Length: 581
Image (tube, rainbow, N blue to C red; front, side):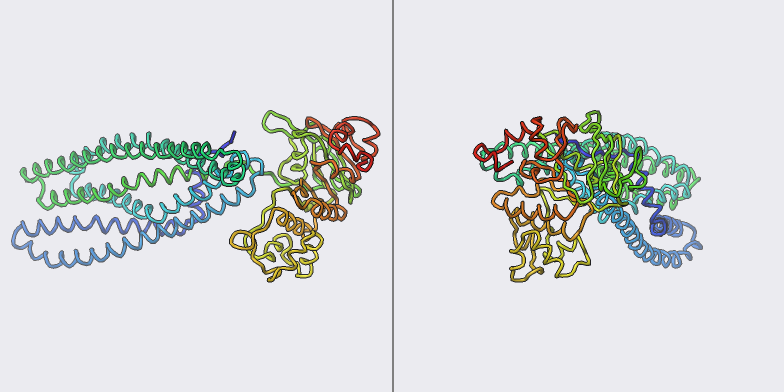
């Protein structure tokens, strides 16, 4: 069962946003100033119009003000246009920069997560966050946030403008606020969980789709295509149902807002009639107040029309920040400062002393003590679930002991890992090999390929400049494994871990020979899934239920007649027992 990555709460999301704002304080300040100036210029327009009304309806002497007021209105209209454009650009710029930083942090954090945590979450879950959620936030920052921020500032300035015109008209306009607050609170309470559920369903759908595509041959072989399609459709329908339900909530929300507009404008017109009729206010003031309030319809509509997108972006932002809350693999401790015991010695490349590891409350490695000699070859064997791969993950740095300690003979050791699943990046073969050794020469790359048994690569028409991977030359599983072995040869690790590095059918002999060639050059730990991989090792460690139960050479363990001997007898070909020994 998958274990989704966490989703950040509102407080944690605000904390991360605050940190991003502080890192972009200059751009953020410019955006705020631009928004404030644009909003002030916009609110000043109806105030000037109110002055025009008073000049027209007042005494003849007051009409001399009309020309300068009209000129001021023209200048103000130009300023409004320029300031509005500047404010939107400033908001979009700082928003994109903050998103770029957040996107980089999330991507780096995902790469630093323990491999097993990513596998437990499911690649579909991870991909939906670093692609789908980033796309939703990015689209909102680019197209929605500038308008929403401008509208929010305009609403604030308009409220201040009403207070300047006449506080009594401001009080009348405030009658709309309770209706708006009730509408917004009801919408927020219902919409946010719906959007989060829709994004979670999207992640589950992505995971099921990836699994079906990656296991296409299995799906076809067992005829389970309709079943997998049904599961995908179920998640897609669940996502659609949440989206439709959110749309219904939004429709009710808009109806309540229209009612708020009616209440507010009606109250302003009523109060305006009273103050004009009693002579305690002017027609221009009442006109300006009504225009300012009507001018709020657009900004309020913009903000609330953006609520759907902002809510979706908020849900996606919480999922992105949630990735940052997931603990990464801690850095490997230096050999000289390993806690709880001695560091590796000159003759011991890797030392584990009473090391244990637990997934939550379940301990899968218990009191493992092992020394891997410099230049030695140690094979780890045992039944499935014995703890072999977890032990390899400790040495590789993907996991760290929950008790005991692990140390190396050198500080910051280079550990190379070759497993059954190795990725070839899209691009030239040269660029793929350079990942392991950026300064490697062509001669060194060709030698590494030769040592990995990849003679086919040297015969390519474009040589090392041949494009491989997606969009280029497709490589077989065995060829990808050979490229991985060549990368290890260029990486020149202090410790090499081989985990099913020579298990590809059809190329077993070639891969086994290349893997054995590498093992002879380095301190090597082989996770032996086939016992013939262990027979040639200097030391064989037999594991069971997370503990080391036997250790010795192949001959010594056979002679002891214990668990290894029983495992060997059950595995080795019946007709070649002596040859196997």
